[in-house]
Length: 216
Image (cartoon, rainbow, N blue to C red):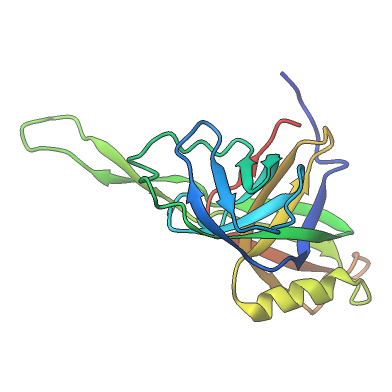
């Protein structure tokens, strides 16, 4: 068991990607192994962004656990269920995140969404209502920041916003535990605040799929 505060937490945007590399096969396993095209350049410990046929794998980020020639193990990506991950559906492309820009001067991160949604599955003969789980709401994190247009990361976030496609997000808490995902980015370029307040603005990230969490 561990308790931690937000003090020391750091946030990053993927500032540089390597070229997309073809995935020719992906295993159904406790940790998915993808077969990449030769000369892929993937190394242990780096983060990769998937674009694949699996709905539960597309636009997700994973850390590389092992590399054996062209076979790359994605840490913690459990694809054993062929119902959720149909055989052959993991082909597509992989992009390595080769550089990150820190989103500095964050004052408060606020998370919204991710709640389970339900459909009424009740029958007339049953006096008790039944809620059947279906989708979850989209997860969005809003970072309130000290407003400073001179900071380099703002250009990177602006480019991600203008590109209109999911770009890598990563956070690391005070215990060094990372979380990462791909999200649509938005930046507020006007500072706000009342008399005597610190001038603030926001960066907002709306995740395109599940977020990956690691204990170390």
